[in-house]
Length: 166
Image 1 (cartoon, rainbow, N blue to C red):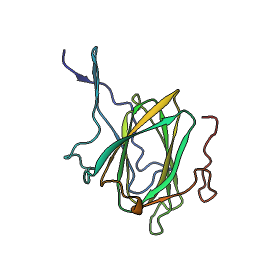
Image 2: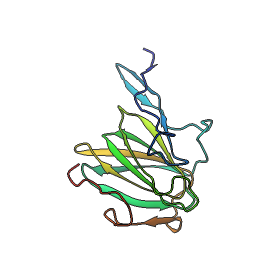
Image 3: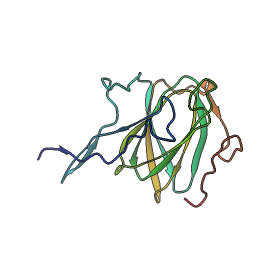
Image 4: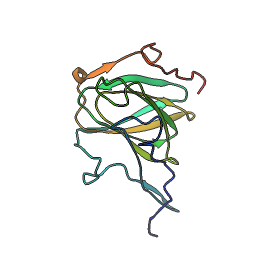
């Protein structure tokens, strides 16, 4: 039984209205057969790969929001390996051509994609699936709380309102 790639169901968003300069949404291969599936996430020879720092998994319950954060140096590489997650990005970089833009991306194993978030982009995510979703992050450097800014998910600093009934 050989694993054959399934059709890619994720859609690239870069260059479309609502996209943010430097953010990439890369459809990822999923290889499946009657035994299960292999979900590729990131390779060192991918054109969007920058550096390896650490990989971790974040769980989030349905309706719960984990936001807002902004890394000053780190590039985040998110993929949802279980459940369904809404990722929201906000560009507040002073020199950015997309300053003030918001971007929403829904990811799941069925809409399997890597979301590459460069430094300086405010971002957060919300669990959409019962009971739990899992987001993987292959970060470009190990966690350092000194390079991270955080805000309350319901802060008025951002032109986005998280749905409380998601």
